[in-house]
Length: 272
Image (cartoon, rainbow, N blue to C red; front, side, top):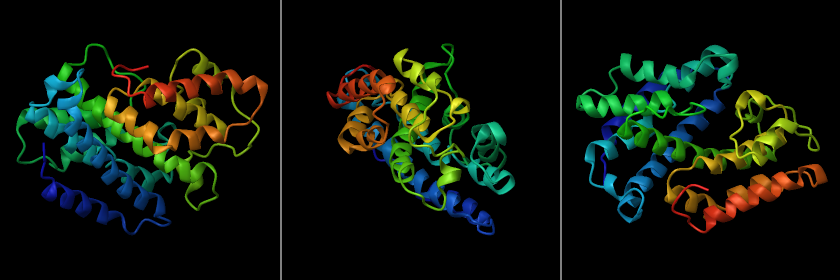
């Protein structure tokens, strides 16, 4: 399903142009690139629905598919005012960027011309995309849109992180949320999360290796088979995990994460 976003892409670019005066704005330029890649991933999810036995019923739902791609485009609008004001992307030390994104597109009428149903679904996807967990009471359409945005977002974050985990690039501290770069250290609780099949929280991260483990636990959340296959085929997860230390205490967690990656590589229909 081809979804024309030309006018919305321009609206987004017009919006971010208002942040050109932000000092040391390289992290914001990364967010623009990230946004368009997330849109590409979201479009691939939409295109894959007819071939996914678990999702085929959504393939002909034009409003939902449109909402997926629009929510992907606008999911990080709040990152720009967040960074300008607080100089960080760490929500815990600034503001909930998803809430700020929701307020931005609502107050700026970014979705003018869309039906009420599409606007509602887009706003849900934007508002909820960074939640640690989604409510079981969330309506199926809203859950679908939000899951698609979350999958698309995570897939590109893997790409971004591979470049920053091992290299001292200028924006590294902001991208990695100011964790400590000590190659032989990790937080035991994060390793426990891996072993217990639990997604780690950003607020528990202390070291770069914690970030590697966190990214590994994200495979537990990926809803769409297309996303899991794309991650496995990209080689990004191998790059993330290869940087973990060979400490015996960490070996069980590493083995479990490689097993989760293998499930993704097999293209398993359901989540691991």
